[in-house]
Image (tube, rainbow, N blue to C red; front, side, top):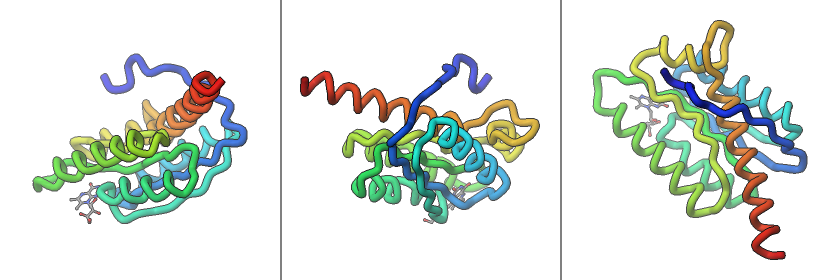
Length: 160
Ligand code: DLZ
């Protein structure tokens, strides 16, 4: 089952500047992911801004610009639903490898909140909406913040 084994993450994000980059396909699911990310960012005390791109394919370039612009962490949100076209594999692969590349290349953590689902019901179940079993927007924000704190602390260890 998706989500089994997920950690409980509590993070103090005070002073961290976060950019949320969010795709626009599948509006209802995206609304849930965004709301979950906002809840986590508020709970952590982080400062954030949000930008929207058309689809998940465009998330890496927006994340890259956010990282280059001084963000301490990026949260990438999107929903890709398998259809009758090869686009599913192409878009998922581009988003996944592109976002990984951004985080490793820039050293800025990117929370991966891109749902890749067989159908809309699966996506709604992970969207943090009323009745959903999982809250992937919040999870992605918590992961990005927690990793930003680790990287900040690692910097102190290495340079002390
Ligand atoms: C083309 C496309 C398709 C078929 N499906 C999705 C989807 O389920 N979720 C999503 O975020 N984006 C989708 N896109 C759009 C691509 O991500 C991209 O925006 C376009 O190919 C234009 O570059």
